[in-house]
Amino acid sequence: MGGLSIWHWLIVLVVALLLLGGRGRVSSMMGDLGKGIKSFKQSMAEDDTPKPPPTVPDAKMSAPDALNAPFPENNNKPPMNQG
Image (cartoon, rainbow, N blue to C red):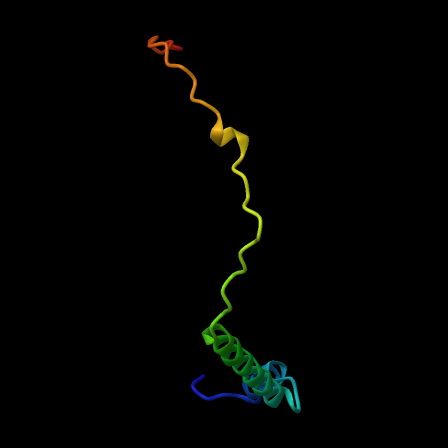
């Protein structure tokens, strides 16, 4: 019971082959990781560059009519109780 039989070793071998996927699997995963790190560094460097100031349009934009409308008159009535 304490030792590992041939069946245990075969199961471990099959699981290892499934996880690693044969030849080139680990190296391709490390290559993808390196590409991801390189892309991350490039995007961080792009964020550090100063952005040009936003352009100001020549014509002034008019305020919407709703903002220029007068306030409704307050007729000092108590609110209706909708209990």
